[in-house]
Amino acid sequence: MPCSDGRDRDGGCYENPETVKRLDTATRLLCFLCKKLDGQGEEPIDNQVFIENRDLFKWWQNHKKEDGKMQEEEKKQAALQKLTPEEIKLLKIKI
Image 1 (tube, rainbow, N blue to C red):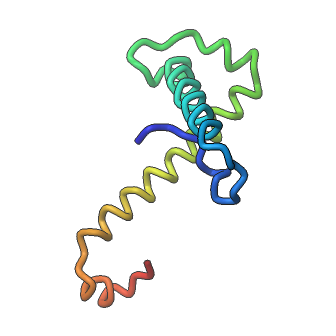
Image 2 (image 1 turned 135 degrees about the vertical axis):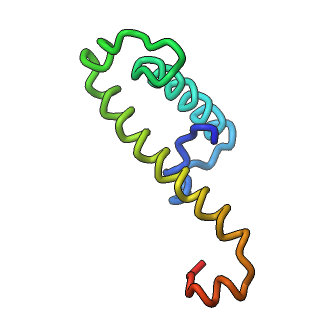
């Protein structure tokens, strides 16, 4: 799943598709760098940056939580697509 900051689009805050594209690109790049800083990449970079920049650290912690939630939702939707309407009804799943 590519990283993006799609949370604000639900409220219709973004009207310019080019702005959305640029924000998604910046978010993906920042996510890539933070993964490296956090040691989640192939070769971790010194995480002194997180110590010196608390705003970046807070953003990264929140981003990881949001990413986890989106990944869980994607897994749930993929699993639901495998069920028949009868199975969904028997399991009393609300879609």
